[in-house]
Amino acid sequence: MISPGKPDRSGERPNNNLLRRLNDADFALIAPYLSQGESASDDLLYDPGDDVDTVHFPCGASLASYLVPNEDGRDVETILVGREGAVGGIVSLGYLPAYTRINVKFGGVFAHLPIGKLELAKTASISLRNVFARYADCLLAQMFQSTACNAIHSIEQRTAKWIISALERTEGPNIVPLTHEQLATLLGVGRSYASRVIQIFKLEGLVETRRGSIVVRDPEGLRQRACRCNESVKNHFEEVLRGVYPTEVVP
Image 1 (cartoon, rainbow, N blue to C red):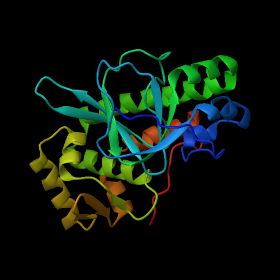
Image 2 (tube, helix red, strand yellow; image 1 turned 45 degrees about the vertical axis):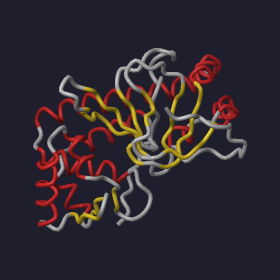
Image 3 (cartoon, rainbow, N blue to C red; image 1 turned 120 degrees about the vertical axis):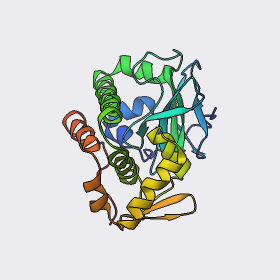
Image 4 (cartoon, rainbow, N blue to C red; image 1 turned 90 degrees about the horizontal axis):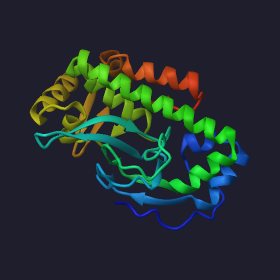
């Protein structure tokens, strides 16, 4: 698992929208205990059964993902979490076992905070506790929407949704560092099926592929091919935590 590293003494807030949503007094309660460090794609944050002792905040274009192990040996990805949120111990009081596998989807900077320090800050500030409770509600909404999406929407709709969802959290050109294998895991299908869908999108001029990544050529066209699940989640974020969910796609 990732080592949290040394505390960040720079005084600057990490590039994480949830942390930047805190008022100055609330951020000051946790700032001395925050650390930052680089994490690589596929780094493990938690395995099922691990004690959840650290909250991890993706920063910038970094992404974490929740994966549910299944009896056939496959991990099925459920939701992505980017700079709008955090993973690990958001709902619980900490030190409870992880239910899913959580890993780094797109590498980059992560901020880390010991669970115990977050819980002490929550007891000291109602407003800080409120922000994290609201985020927990948004996280639950993502999970509900993902369950419904997997049940009723086509592979093509879900593929477009995942790519747009990842793209909205990146900062730069319309490049998503997503392999066909990773996309297949997101969708819970075989790699060949995911590759066929990407080929359809290429023929429609929506995307191109490079080694280890997908280049989005027509974000609006891809959005039209997607289901509305991502929009539903974004709308809920706006109702509950306005301004936290990234919405800009670089043209």
